[in-house]
Image 1 (cartoon, rainbow, N blue to C red):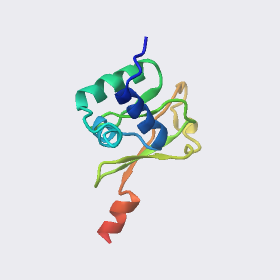
Image 2: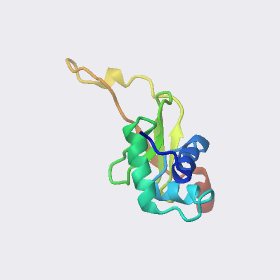
Image 3: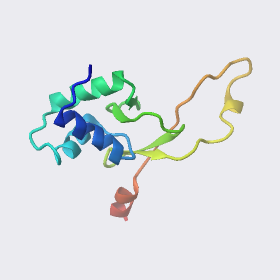
Length: 126
């Protein structure tokens, strides 16, 4: 049975209000706005529990920390900013991926990650 705590509810609200994948540290920073004494251990325990019950899903990128986002979203991909480290959702999916699969192979899924600088970081560089 899920315990309904102020900390858990604050973390769940973070995912409802955020439209991009977050690291546990980002979750902590946002949830602390509601629960100032929240600790990182509670964030990790809650993220584990929310992942297990299917409320959130992990977003993995090579060489980067695992991030999490709300479950149940339409198929989408991600953009990772090389400068600030934040990750953002991208709408849609590139067409023609299935045509790139070698002949005789059967594709059952894919991941697509774009790297660059986010809008904020791109403006700083100019």
